[in-house]
Length: 467
Image: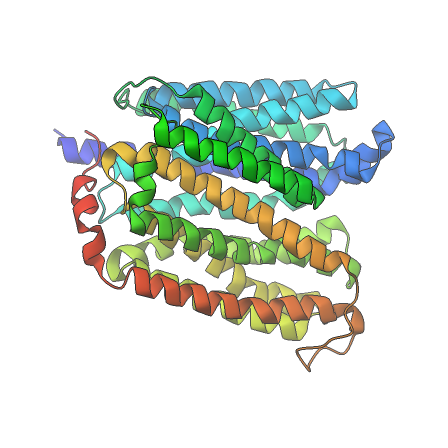
């Protein structure tokens, strides 16, 4: 007869497998449409900026949803939240599939994002609830496999679909997530937090802050940025003076948690430079098609997927600091190497990209594990929801900032003496500069988390999985 511990362990492993599959679909859905924007623009006879709302709208709702679902775990069970999210994801997919007008495609993508955003929120909470702190790193490493494989397959599948069939087929792929719903219903428990009155005004203010600031980033608008800051001030005042705030401000008085979010924002933003810059480099300098760009990027994502669980094991066995510094070293090697080989054969890009993407994956695991251990049990839902939101905003910020630098065009300044093609200087300079930030933020991590004693209390409160 199985013990409760072995049953709980088996349940956790099954849930991790389901999460990996669902994350692959979710991440692919977020990245596939980047490739087919020109096709959509041509079909509906719209400008590139209008077509970009397929990405921008999804990004805004996805960021808002990740923290909202985390907050809702205080009132509803993971089982019911995931059921609602996956069904909403499917409704959005069907809407996009049958869309006859462009506005219907936008509606489909927004509804998709409103449902799909439950997945990153739940993927951060399940390892915390179902695994002890000693095994949590491995669990988070397994979850990272889904992110890596989604990033690996998204561009390739989108390229094949757009050249062989119709871009609408991408919405059909998203429907595969429904296959996991019966298993989630079977293995997720019905536990939920203490039901409290929901602060809808605070939630709306937070959503407005995120939406307007992301729009400010994507459009480069100072006025939108000022508007977002103003709404954020109202949000801060709201959570400080309302009895049951949407986010309890006390969570930010937890210094390790707050510093963890800051470090996560910078490190994840830096790491996202690899999947963002590389396709543009390969397209503009090496003149590769979307399918071949996906093939060049495939080995790095597969390697990150294969070694994701090993990264989590390193965090469990040697500590999060060891994994953070390992990830930082890999990121630095990747950036310095790519800075030197830009413009050369795509084979070199594929080889050195492995270091960077693997470092990005390890950093995601290390920071999610670090942040989770700073939270008490009652703050896990909203805390990890905030973590998911911060990682997404970090990627949006990275995209906006690096995109503006690339928009300036070819640079005449060459920081690295190896590249000879002037068209590659701007890429080489970015790759060479980012390691400086990595060193600075890794030093901040060391100072803040050099003593594990700062996390002992919360770790004890949250070390046992749900039974």
